[in-house]
Amino acid sequence: MKSFKKAAVAAATTAFLFFPFLSSAAPTSLSKRASGACSGDCSGVHDPNVVISADGTYYRFQTFNEITISTAPSISGPWTTQGPALPGGSSIDLPGNTDLWAPDVSNIDGTYYLYYAVSTGGSQNSGIGVATSTTMDSGSWTDHGSIGIPQNSDWNLIDPNLLIVNFGDSLQMSFGSYWDDIYQVPMASPPLTLASGASPVHLEQNSTARPDGLPVGPSEGSYQFWWTVGSTNYYYLFFSSGACCNTPPNLVPAGEEYKVMVCRSESPTGGFVDQNGVDCAAGGGTPVLESNGDVYAPGGQGVIYDKGQGAVVMYYHYVNPSIGYGQDDFQFGWNTLDFSSGWPVVS
Image (cartoon, rainbow, N blue to C red; front, top):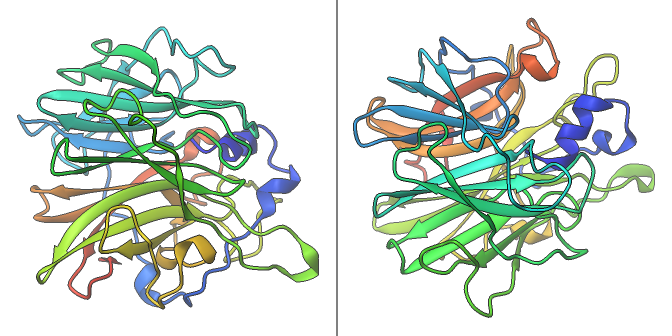
C-alpha cells in the first residue's frame, strides 16, 4: 500500500495528503465510468491484486493483515475471505513487517511469487520482499525476505510490480511512491532478487508546477502490462496519482483526488510517454479512470486478461461516498478496457 495512503487513514489532515496530480492530457468523459458489479466481501479492499488459477478460481490479494487473500468464481464475486498469506508477517526487520502492503503476484513455471512492501505511514524506511507458493492458498506461502533493492533518498521501496516478458528472458520490477515517484529494475531468474549489478531506472515523475509554490503531486502504485495492438507490442505503465485517502471535511479540491493514469512504450524498459507524447518522467500521463458518480478516488489498480469477461479488465479500489470514506469502506471495483485505439479506454 502507498505509504502516504496509510498515513491518510490515521491522520487525514496531514498536509502532504493534499498534493494534486496535474496531467499533461486533459481529462475526457471516456475516463469516467461506473464500476462493474461486486458481491460478497467487497469492502475494506486496498491495493487489490487479482490472479486467476489454473482451475479458474479468482484469487484477490490486498493490503493489511499480512496480506489478506479472498477467492471468487468470477471477477464480480461472490468474494470470500480465506485468511492471510503470511500469518507471521515478513522476515524483513523494519517497522510495519506484520502489516504488509501492496501485494503483487505472478505465476512462473507453476510457482507463484508474491511481492509485498514493508513500511509505515509517511516513511521512506521501507523494503520490498517476496514469498512463494505453489497454490496461492492462505498459509501456503514461504517468505524469502528482501529482494535486495537498496534504500535510497530518491525512491521509496513500496508498491512492487513484476512485468514478465518471455518468461525468464526479461523480468522487470517497477516500484516507488512520492519522492521521485516510480522506478524500474531488472530481476534475476528466478525472481527472488534483483539482477546482478542492476540499478533502478527512473520511469515516471509528476513534475507539473502548482500555483503559489506548493509541492507537486505524487505518483505511485505502478502496474506494467503489455498488449498487442495491430502488429505492435505496447508496454503500458499504469499508475495512481493524487490524494487517495482524505475524509470529509478535508477532501481535496475536485480533480486533485486519486485517479488512474497511463503512459506507454514499445519497449518494456521505456521510455514511456503519454497520449500527447509527453515523457512520463517529465510529468506525462493520460487519464484512464477518474472520479465519477459513486466512484471517488479510484486507484491501486492492476490489469489482467479475464477469459470470463472475454476482455482485458482493470481492477482497483475506490471510495463510494454514499457508503463512507473510512479505511473499512474502500470498495473493490473493476472495468473492462478497450485497447483498439492503442490506448486503454474504460468501458
